[in-house]
Image (cartoon, rainbow, N blue to C red):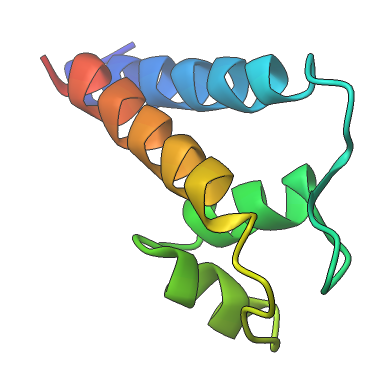
Length: 88
């Protein structure tokens, strides 16, 4: 296995650990107004979302009450950190 393959594998493992850690919380939904689940947000992040606005756009909706924005930002930040660690 080459160094690029190891890096990709490590990044994938870290991403799924981050997603799995978010499933520990009692709620399944991140955004109740739009019915966005953690897996919807995670899929948007994996597709390249870097802001909550991107997550909403990917799911073809818009922020309503914005209570979910902080959790989305946490998920985005944790994913960025996971990829940064994998790149080292």
